[in-house]
Image (cartoon, rainbow, N blue to C red; front, side, top):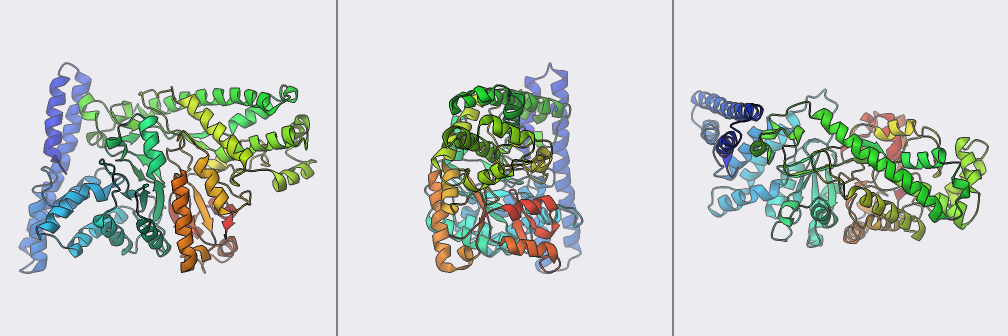
Length: 595
């Protein structure tokens, strides 16, 4: 919008001159220019069609709109946008070629909005109409028979968050964007509020209020404080670039003009499995938890080394393909004359996705508590129970399920183990770079695919009470009633578990609430305060469900009766009856909090 495709053509010309002796890179630059020309040609074709329609529309509002559209398409996206209308149209046209997140929509449209409003060239109603046409185009891109048509994980974007001057960026335009989107009876796109320490409580309350009244559940919440620190301290971005981050898809982290490079799924529970089975002969000789943890730490180290190698293999396989369209818009690809798939982008993050983090914390907690502190069983007895898949050792498993100091209860033992684990993951990855030189941030969500089920099916019984082949957990949180102390301790555990921010990649935290905490206005005010406190303590994300497990079970029995019931899954929303049975199981097992 600031430079237009004309600016991109100028950059392509400079790159061609810089790489004039490299035939392969010149070929890539030529291909990028072909793509850019195609976008311009498409806009010109649409302008001509609008002119033709205007000619047969007769006099009136329709003719005027078509002429306005034609004139705008003759300017953008080739030239910089000169108005709010042209800015939105630039997004509309280029999105047709790169259908991804809208990014930080409220901040890059703000100059156009404020200028046109001040000059009397735009009204709020007109701005709303232009935005709604854009949002309808995002929904309309999905075919009705596509499984993603009613999934609110497409074209996820953000409002609010820190701006480059260190101020909170939630503005009047942010509010207008939210209202414009929620007026539409659609599922796509969804958005997240980026909360900052400077966000007024009224804004958080407003967004949570809009969320509780949105039947299509399109709103989630992320915290700028830990994420921007991680982007600066771990990834190495300057503040003015870190504040530009956005969420996309199922809550994946991305940077405008950049990309998350990786996102291979990893079963981190393997480090526990390899310790209690592969190192079983050594463990009974461990006299203290610290001695045991030293053995576990070796397996964690080996797994992290494997993960880095696998991430590189994953990206080298992707590098067999050359990306032309996205590379045109990602920073560095033009100047380097290199596809984003081959490391051409200069602003990127390596993001392995770790599934099973809570299972690892709980397994270590059980070993420390039951074997070393309370001596409820010996290491040999626990290992035998695992080898037998708990068969014949049901009493021990029941005792663990009832008495274990699981993660999510703000317990000193499990919280300390969580901090030790995340700190060790940080230590393992902080000096590593990906094959293309990018730093690592860890994610923990599953998106649309059931990696927690697939990984679990190949993972043997673990000390946290899992049986062979049981699903493992995604996200950072708790389920199955293990967070038995209530919501406030759960949030406190999550908020303080990651002192280095290594889990600030593509992360999700699911919170299941009793409906009265949302529906009752007095209790709702307390819920807003509680979630604000959670963010101030360092929590990275939350999304809310407030449907009782009983109602969800009833929905399974009578799907036609509850076919309009929508829930948050893993960074996206969908109709409960449309989910696979295992995803339904995962939601049902989340602990409902009533305090």
